[in-house]
Image (cartoon, rainbow, N blue to C red; front, side, top):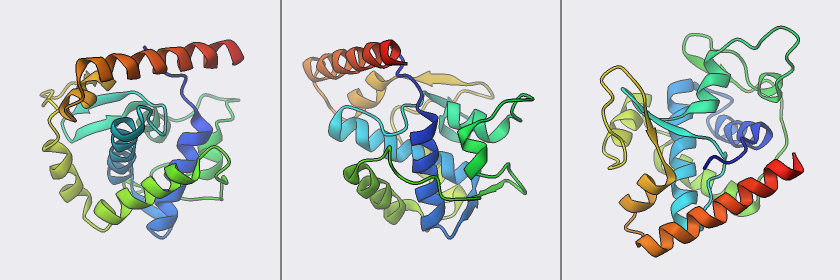
Length: 182
């Protein structure tokens, strides 16, 4: 089960973190902070913020679609929302180009992003990487990439099987509605 990726919402979440950091940040650190915000949202509310998919890579968990937006040059004639507001990498950092607004983010999501930044945003990218290596759902992929499912995160948060099933069912229903309305 995959949620429909909301690039606008993901961009707005990334932009909020970039603003909190002064407008520029290592994209490695940005992807880790977004993962941590999504992880905490999933545990608290049963739904991630960015609607991204997650993978274990050598440097820890990654928000995979956002990572692709950062690392891959857009196809010709492709107008991506992300690239209008967040720069291509320069010296392994991205910058906020313009304000994408926050119409897709709720106040509690904004507050959670701020909380994650307050906890981890002032650490170096490598300190954040080391922290994400301590998360129980991360598995060292030895140069590859391994998927991290919502269930994996919820299990590590000691959710019961019934709670996990309820969350998965709610996410599945949400994904179906999103696909119908898309």
